[in-house]
Image 1: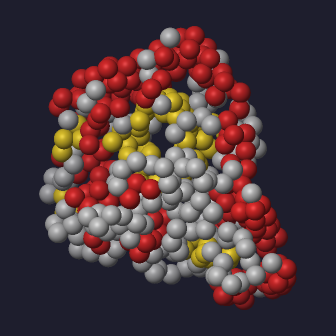
Image 2 (image 1 turned 135 degrees about the vertical axis):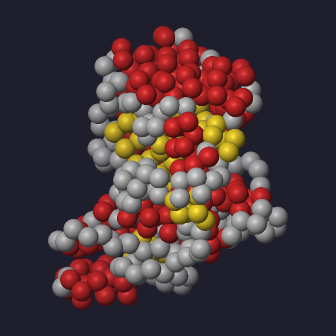
Length: 420
């Protein structure tokens, strides 16, 4: 309980400093979403997670269930939620009464205070190669959507499902992207559903796994958004300097091949582990920092992919916390940006948009060391007087205060630091 108390107190204090000084962290990464998984026995309470999420500017959260504690904690915050309905419920919710009961209890009960905008029904169902699951997927989605319609919620809450990138038979070059032929019969009706209801197509894309499986052939800089020569897609004549964008555009090409060129694509999961087993190449804090830091920079630039330069990058980073009870290799338990005590799993620079200070340009920073104001969110060093989970770099604050003349902010910061 002592850990939770210090977590809550110091996170609130940190946020108060930002508010008093005029820093609006929501401008930093307000296009970025985060996956909030909870397969762990040491995570902070949802009430304590709220100030953390707000302080780093996250505006969208994806849950793997519809945890009422989380949804209640985030009431009146404005944070958008995608809630999940697990694979184990696909058969049950085909019953209209069961679907309506689920929607009433897990969605309607939290509206409008909590901003639930989407339900994803099932996770990576089609790549389990289990016909009992795949045959139940679309009927479950249709039933949940019908429940929303009956409750007059279908205009504000959409229904979708999340897919693994392995539903693609071909992903390179991106212009040749195509779905697995054995899945086309399942996917096409689902795409029709998306088109009719206006819901997005969700894909989980992890360049990390491509690198892990073939580290000698896949250039590390290419998967980490670092400077590299990239590759030219001879089919489209488009140049790609990172794998994630190539993967996204391969999905767009696969959709277009089936006649769904205008369907929006959201990346429901992507990330990089900070720790792994000996045979898990690339799973290091340094690489995780580069991947997620550079990804945040790209999201803030709002430039889209080579094939869709004007499209928003609707990306949900995996994940908010390390989850100590996830099965599988070590990497599975180390995808979090934060440790359960709220301290960063590794140092990552988050930047403040210049628009917060009166001009319309945003400034961002990444693990590659690009320019712009960086406010590193780092754990307090051992032996300091602060027991809190976040400490803003005093050097960064001082520099920015001189730049924009917010001397009162520096005074507040130093006073609060002295109190801690």
